[in-house]
Image (tube, rainbow, N blue to C red; front, side):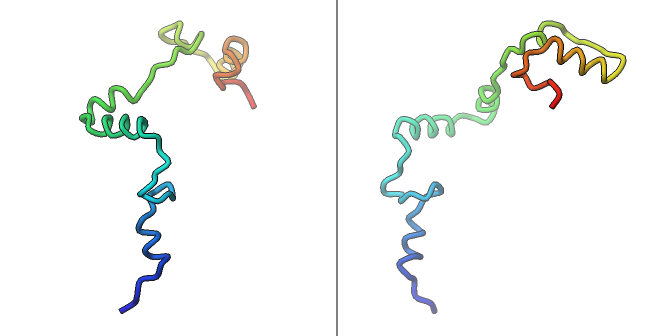
Length: 89
């Protein structure tokens, strides 16, 4: 049998973020919100986990088609804001 060291005992008291469980550095209001969300059914959590963000120009038409990939890339460069990330690198 092996004796437990102080390091073994100390590691048992640590949480995933490395802090001691006795004094977590997670604000209590964040922890309360997390625990409330964890109690919700999976279907509800899935419904609220995706946030739709309007993408200018892309969301303004139901579809677009291009004859070539080059046409598509040119259209992206000419029409989409750079922050959307559709430009060439």
